[in-house]
Image 1 (cartoon, rainbow, N blue to C red):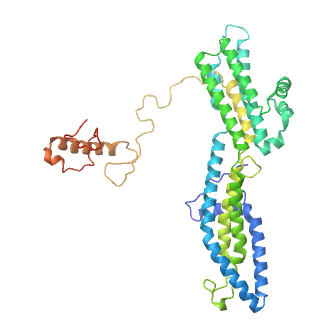
Image 2 (spheres, rainbow, N blue to C red):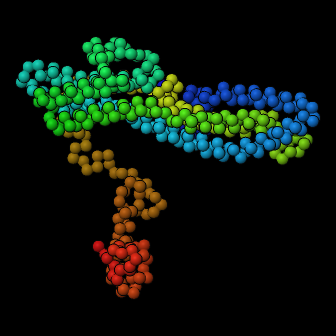
Image 3 (tube, helix red, strand yellow):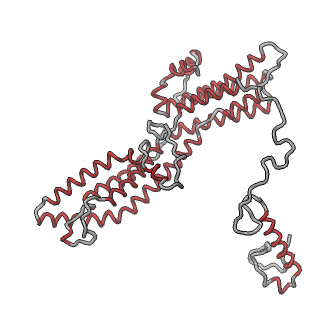
Length: 418
């Protein structure tokens, strides 16, 4: 279930705290196990260090100083690699979301395109059956796709029998899908059926040529988006890239278990003159880098069972309800035309509010006023330029007007003013 937090206030005093200390889908819930393990090992090594003999302590301290220099130099490389990885994951995550199809545009085109002759008996019911069948086939193609790419949909509605029970598929249609000779995903079969229904309706005169073209375009867009979703599921980010980034982050903090140890202040090592008892800077870096990595892992598979995964089950049910509703309940049933409340009013909601920008007579909502002012000023400059003598023209600001030239290597003898 997607966690929405847009309503959390930031501007109010301590408003960010309301967001920072949320638990569901938060960074704390994502990293607390790894952080707890890291702290347990860290303090185990701390106890071991203080229990060592003096000579062994000096050897361990030299090891800490050496590893500290390495980790200090490597953190920039880890951050760069991780940042690029998260950027690629985010781009892929948002592209995946934008490729989830919504039934509204197709249903509206079906409503506008499928007509019937009221004088002929049975035409109204046939028209309704055409509209609902097209919507059902498109939602069936989506359901077949979501069964493959979504863990939640695949678990709750597995196989063709689940789609038969849902009402998106009939027994005969299921047999046709099972009998296909193609060793590929079968989402294209309901799309083909929908195209055939539209083509037959066109031949029967229920759809005009123009609306036939529009409907085919909308159906093709639907098919293209479903194909893209299958592609995102099929082709992930290269595994070697994921291995490189994940290994870099966790290896960095494996080294930091030693490199981040507090040393004996009496030895006066640089940067180790105090023992705070808690590695707060290491913990903060752990929260940022490991949390960053966890966010990339979440965005890499948005159709999983995480709390911020896309709710494909809800989208599928919504498309079924809204699609059938548009082509059934709202077909040719627009409200009666009436005069609106603002009939004949020049400014229906009154004068626009004035908000100045620090300059007189210029407001954020008086569109074009500042441009008109600038245009008049520029016209005056251009007029004075045209009326000025030729020797004066060369001394004026070249930013006002730069004449075009046919040859970049030559200088025009006179300005080309249009």
